[in-house]
Length: 218
Image (cartoon, rainbow, N blue to C red):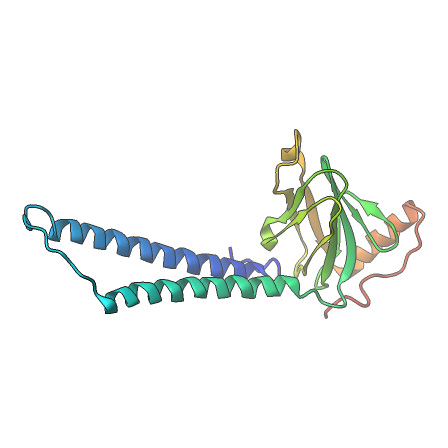
């Protein structure tokens, strides 16, 4: 956690810990209150029950406090969603196709690969589609996941800030070999990425135009 692998990972990790902490606090509070009430109002201590008509301030309190907590969680989730929905205009556009049982990546000039290679410090936009059944494109280290559905497009984006490799998985059961639907995101520095892209373009007889000039954020 907190490795900063993408623009969203640290925020998602912080939100997860905050919600887990609040949930744990509520759980402990309820358990303590339950045990206290069981002891305080046991049959031995209170052989004759007392009828309680109601307590307006108490009812308001146990309504308002959970409302504030849950609306705070909603706000954190909504803010995270907006971060992932705001795709930079200069993002490098790539096409991702899901099928049983592999991912295919297509670059702007038509180069296709089964491994996603991207330049560091450049926003990347993925246009997601499926040609058969429902899939889910998931990069655990980036804390991003999007459904890939037939006849319906979807998008996601990210930026990688260091040279590294990260797992890609399908997070929705899509058939017999679903568990084998793994590949990698490989982030390269600008020079290494362009050298790879030029080489792949030549091997697949595609025209080569540098991709990082307009997308690199540095």
